[in-house]
Length: 258
Image 1 (cartoon, rainbow, N blue to C red):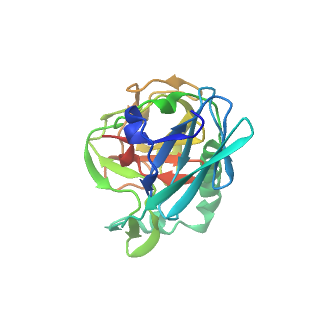
Image 2 (tube, helix red, strand yellow):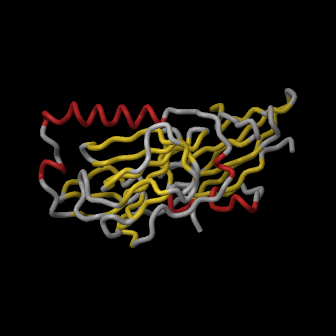
């Protein structure tokens, strides 16, 4: 295959030659080993098996180009990205300091963000993205990707993941294989927080956990228990915040599962 084969992560088994996607989508592609790949001129890491990935953010532009180079010959495939509409989510009853943190906690928040950012900067080699994803926990979807959040009447950044309401202590499982890249017992916003590195710039985060059952550096398989649902950090009730990111681009986790 000299040209890129692209497929949405939720349709991995189809290996479709798709060219139309939507904002918030994680796209995985495959080329022959040794072929180089660019997205809009940006080089993408390619695994030994030829897998690569990229994310289309909440406000991704309508058009893009995938370029592949094989034996010195370039090929291009145009991408069309469908625009989405996002809801507005209002959350009231939060402690004031959780909406507008006191200045003295700024250093703590900055340290949390630096640790998360370091994980998301990873470009590790792995073949895990060739598998389909499953939900990390079953429950009611209480917060969706992309929603503009208004906390106690104060507009905030759009929601960068999905919230799944479930009883405290409910098991959280790995939606796909990966390596534990961060374990933190008490982040300011997200409380007990866990991150997995799935390779090729794709990471996932699990926040507000009650307990964490894995350790840093551990390889986890799909379906393996990561910990339990909780209400730590900034949370009004027990739930899992599940986020998936390509590099620093947040994508919609619900587009990854059937």
